[in-house]
Length: 202
Image (cartoon, rainbow, N blue to C red; front, side):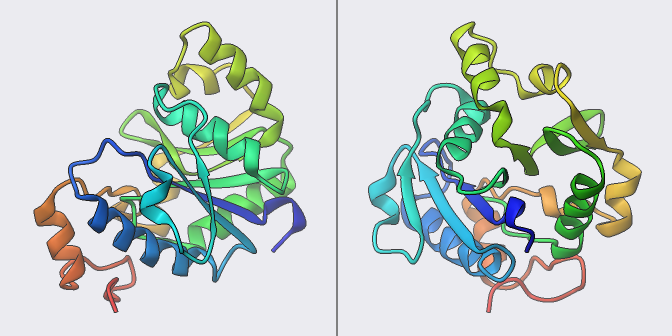
């Protein structure tokens, strides 16, 4: 892993439809996957005690009332590398090939972020952000402007077209978030598969 890209952050907010126990279990799985790719993995949450005694750093969300922007801001604060990979705790489908693709794009083109367009909207997660955006994010939140879509439109952001993302994941399952108990149960029973047909829960 390039020394500029060694940090991955899982955002585990408290406002979820699944229970804390389920979120912790999901995070445990995601941590294991990300540790195979990144040298430093941490969890950021407004309920950090839920994730105590896990094998990664746990930090409290510094801006819990600002949505994804607040979590991404906190991720930059605690990142030990220039770029930080950000994922939500209910997005367990990790596509390593797509992560490698984004790394390659950022290595060749100087930019502050690499995000993906999905049905005309920018996906804030499964994305890379430069810590150079830290103070710009701080200013944006101070003005009450919490939209990552609008924010990225003013930055040097690489926005990957949807058709490019579908080359790596035809159904864009890597952006699927499990929001209900039913979906979580399907995931745990191995009913949801990654893009290569492998069961996610082992």
